[in-house]
Amino acid sequence: MKFIETFHGDVCVLGVQGKLKGCQEAEELYEEFKRCSQKHVSKFVLDLQKLDWSGSLGIGALIGCLTAARGAGGDLRLSGLNQKILQLLHITKLDGVFHIYDTVNQALNSFSAHPD
Image (cartoon, rainbow, N blue to C red):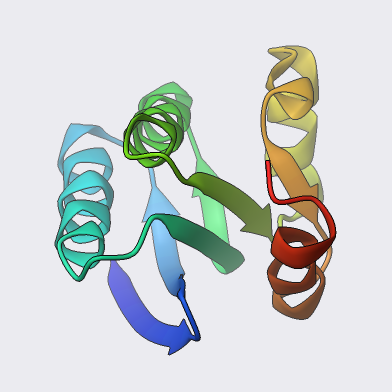
């Protein structure tokens, strides 16, 4: 997996590329997320536009990132999900737990529109 980290004000955008298919990839994502959170930010956007696929362990890693962000007094937004991942989140009813946006810009703007 490959990660691209950028900052937009007080929001860390973490681009995720590849497949989130197993334990190793899920751990890589969570560790990269923790590295970002150590830079004194609590608002995050996971840009999943280049994430090809995710299994249940990958969804577990997304939940871990969300829990960590909210535990630090912040929040997490998801953007750019493909149809397969959207369907997986819908089936598991997690589409009601995550804030999901089509683009990174929409996700970034949501922090000022809905700071929860």
